[in-house]
Image (cartoon, rainbow, N blue to C red):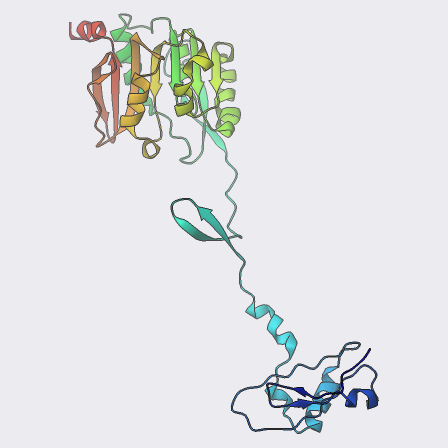
Length: 318
């Protein structure tokens, strides 16, 4: 390898003469001709070889040979000290909110589990236990609310003992407790709309199997908004249902937009009954398309509104 014989000017005030490399007794070691000049700033010198690395003793001897204090020149390996390492962070792009910083080593969520707390209140599957997820991922309709809803529907339909035969649409079905109650009390067919695949496979389907209602049930694993937009594709041209239950997660829907979409959908017919569970301080209209509100009750922080045809309201008043 050719080595230039011209001196190299160092920004640290040190002249490096590469001629000494040829006369050095250590092969591959470049020695420096150092001329000390006064300086006010802290200087760092890194010694290296293009063949063999200098040991710490050789470096110390070299510094002492030229009258330098080795303690003033930190080792190059100190920059990689584990104590200086920080946690890796990952930037994610969140539309509308700019960049956010998230720790990669977040704790994993515990596995989702189920328990049997719900039961069928009436009909041929009365007292059958139903699965529901632990935690607040899915919030089933309270039994007192569900019982009141079916009592009102049975009375409005003219048969207090059972529901009049027909098809039921269970929106935001979750555990399927409302639709299963409908089959148990006389409905001939129920369509369940639930977007969470885990809930469908681990909760809803096992509940239908244990009650024996799987053959008269249809499960749609889609978002409710998508189902309403393409109802005819999912249920055929005769898409009007006799009963519809709407039990969404309170904080994730706008009831004004949702009820407007339902009222304009072909799933609503002239004789349809709609059961809506909604939270406190929510304004519900007195009508939903061609249907009128026939009942509105409060259960603590939960409200229950039922819409139906005008003839059902007259019958209820009598």
